[in-house]
Image (tube, rainbow, N blue to C red; front, side, top):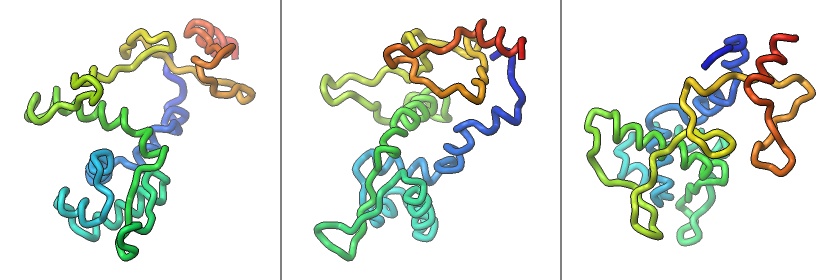
Length: 176
């Protein structure tokens, strides 16, 4: 990456919020369990082998952050269901990317089951970072852009929207 703006501004990005919400081992494993159909406290505890106090703490945090929803079980009102919210389901690409990274670079690369698409039974493609036009980008293809106070974050795929080209962003920074 080139032309890095003030590091303090970069640190204020969404990564800090994401790590605060889910950035430790047990939270990721709980999310993996939720993505694989676990809903009850006892299921998480038995499957993950996590201490009850740690599990209760992590579940409460994920509920507080809006990643899991906590509701009484319809079958047994004494039990509680934990289900992914839309915000939680949006973490699927993050978990898939981390799993793929571990599958390639972990201590036992290539072992364990492979995640497949149910429709055709084929493994998922490796997650990748893509530009707005779908082309893959690597770290050398990226640059930071600091929008002005009047600028809104735009969806590059939305009709009629556009982001400045890196050289335009660079020129804007040089004139400020």
